[in-house]
Image 1 (tube, helix red, strand yellow):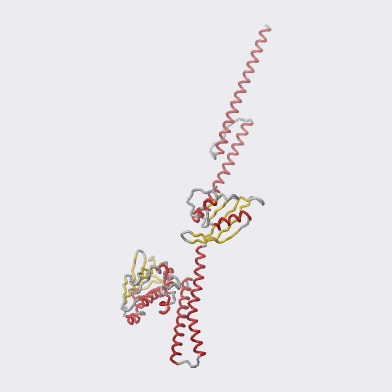
Image 2 (cartoon, rainbow, N blue to C red):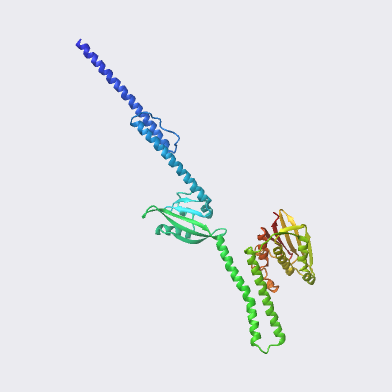
Length: 424
């Protein structure tokens, strides 16, 4: 009986041990599965996948940990979304900038750039982040400027010239990217294209030089002959009259020059510009009448070819433009030649053209004939009383009407100057 009692208790003990072993095994399996779920969940989060959640419903520490991980996932997802949106905004901002942006780290590795920089330096590579600055930029001024900014940790500003197929001028501002008072992430440079400003500045310099020269020549002549008339009391009357005529010619030349300069200034500032509808036939007849006497003296035939009844434009300014073109044609068309004024519609434009059978212009001069003070034959132009501003005035009048100018010419075969004004 005692032996049976011991056997029964032993069996009961074994069953209890087995039961606890089974519970322990199940607990370990549950913990293992939960840990595996957490591991997979963490891996997905590290890969940027925030579309899953941990489904562990136990009320112990594992459940609390799962809830914490789910909460962390939601926070990271929100933060990641904010970062993505900020990155997209930065990318859009950089892409939309007219200026070039380029940032490098202290080792001269590229960390940020935009499309404009690739255009400036003709970078045809894909993503150049992480690559050395020296691989892509060979301009010594740019490289030394970056190196100086990295070394001195200050903001620098400089104008540089980049020569490729064309000459481009840029203003560069380089600023340090400070991490703290001692360390820095690198430097960032802004490349601002100032080529147009440089071009305008050069045009201004040339304009001042040309105006000075145009005034100097007649003024020198006037001063010289005036001194002669004052100091030489015994000068013959015939010689005196000759000198006075030369003085008068130079005064008239200065007067024409001043008139054209004021006219050009008025056109550039768009002062007094009024577009009205007017009949073309009487407008043309009045214009051609002004050249009738000159044409008779040079035995030049004047022709008109009008295919439009009326137009909307600033009539006085259009008269000035066509007058300048006809005046040029009259000067450079030899005896017995032909000058034709035509007005017609062509491909959405009103084309006003003056064609002559004169001397013509060499092809090398054609791109510049509408520039201020540009002369094909400087000596001949001055002899004929030209100021060098007539065609520039024509161009500005065309631009005021939203149009353009064209020229076709062949040396020895005449020229065709056209003003194109949009119909609508």
